[in-house]
Length: 348
Image (cartoon, rainbow, N blue to C red; front, side, top):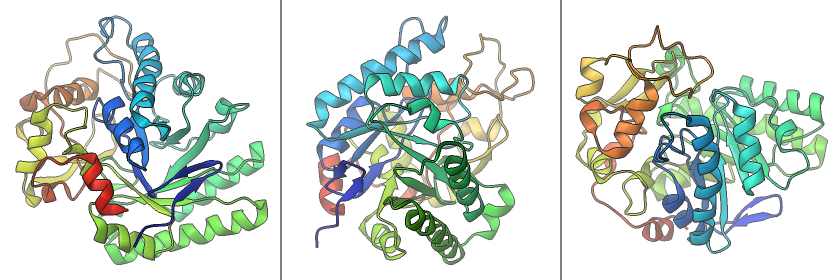
């Protein structure tokens, strides 16, 4: 049975699947454009998006802002009129400039987490770009929606709920990750939905909600939709596609890993994250003897064990012994490389 399409304002995705934004360099133009072309929502990660630009080491911000435009243009060329947007972390240094660059480039949608995107409506004002905050708890949803309503008289065009099984940086304290089970988090999702539906009734505007975190196959998607959400966001499943922008070695690490090799790590910037426990994670750190690349607002190079940008660039390039291999809880389920078109056909 075909799914109901995902409607985000005047945008419609034939299949209610958003491909999660994965940085650094994992979801760029090829992956995002391919997902959009096959009926979903393709998302580029703005995190150090310009790392392959020749002047990145010297001028990282300028390289990133330039790449926002060029990568979106490449994705559009593949998308065939499909929806393409960006994930931009609130924790990004010069966050406002990155959002404005994405708007100027013509992004359909900006999804924003790793902090509360309190000023996002201000940065997209006057544009057609849709905005979607990421929340993980009922409390965060209430705070976020009230701030936007009070400051800007705006409600989200879309809300993303990111659960505890997601990959990369997580919107939970470590203690919360130990408390939430599938059953207890399902109740949290329903509480968030209640908050959203109350705002909908008050504002007379539809706010679609998508659920992310640990959604890998059609059965996972069915369980998510049964909770009352309008769609899902999936990142990990799309890593092991031919179209994913990462090096083949990164994809193979997912295919080779076992369930017990995936766990919670402490990011250099203090947040918990989920990754594959490889040599780099087990043996710790490397000397930070190169220029700071100004990726995150609250990072002190003198205090961190390693540079997260360089560890994630190593992952994208396939240098696994020097890499932080972020992944979702179900990365171990990957058995082979797939085409995006086949995944979307399974999920529709």
